[in-house]
Amino acid sequence: MVNNDEIKKFDKKIKKSIDFFIVKILKNFAFKRKILNFQRIII
Image 1 (cartoon, rainbow, N blue to C red):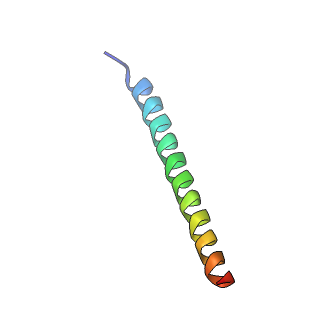
Image 2: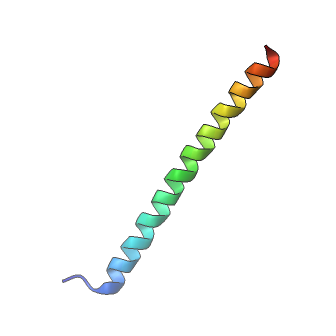
């Protein structure tokens, strides 16, 4: 059996990486939206 502390550490790592992934996607999305808005302004 794995002790509880190990599981908690692992859980935190997973949560961190998921948060990081979400932030990355959101930043990417925001960046694309900015470009689209910018193109609209030019047009």
